[in-house]
Image (cartoon, one colour):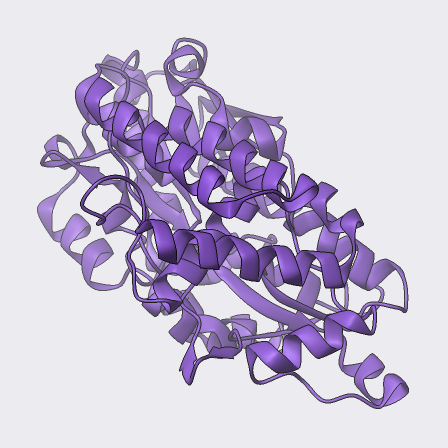
Length: 387
């Protein structure tokens, strides 16, 4: 850590209590522990977080909260600091050993570690316990149960482009084809077409309003009204399990079974990265702060207490973090551990944006699913060739 006064860092995160408040709290406390250091966190929209180029952000900010598919780009461009060259090996070994699912590994590419997994998430289920009794319904256990509940108007799910694509990945896995492993594109054509139609049937049953909902909007709709009982899969937000945060807290759990096996969702979460523009004392300060935030004590303590959703397993197993969130972490940990790690090559993010729009258009307008899958596979081949 620098000893001279006047070191100032800037950071960019995403616009939600989970994304902003724990960073404000940790920056404040770290500054108190290291007089002369200030960290100014700013925020951007959730959509911008998913697809804004990290190269332009790294030119303006020292600290960046990023999505793990950016790791492939970072490995090919001098944008982020390779943390494995600066942080102690025992610290990184602890992060790897105690990550939630593939969260820590998701920020590794081409031999470098490009961020620390300070936040972990994957699509999980959520429901309103108080409404189950009111509507005299049981939690769905199978895909067929889910469709039946959706046809009653009691289900919400996020189906904006990026979330819709993640659901297609999940359904392709359930049908036996891993996205990115097909011989000639993203998915097997027949499997992809079936996945699209399954998802379209569910979205049609739940209602077209879901085409404009991201996970946050789904959860806000569920806690803000009294007509939505269940969400089958949306990136989990422990905030909405807290009575102090939500008017009617949600209870989270795993997804339903599909053809006798539990659905396997697609890993999300966020990582704390350092811009390559950091040098000297600024770099030393940024590295020390990143290690502080990712440490098990901070993750299960100040970070979680401030509304964060930690990436370190110690926090997910901690009695207090679970007590405060109706066992959100214990109820969903196995789903995180099983989550699918999507492709992360250098050109993946532009592909994801376009692929999401293709899936979303099919959900909205219908048509031949084989045509939509052909477009996905063609664009995937082009992205790989460009990379």
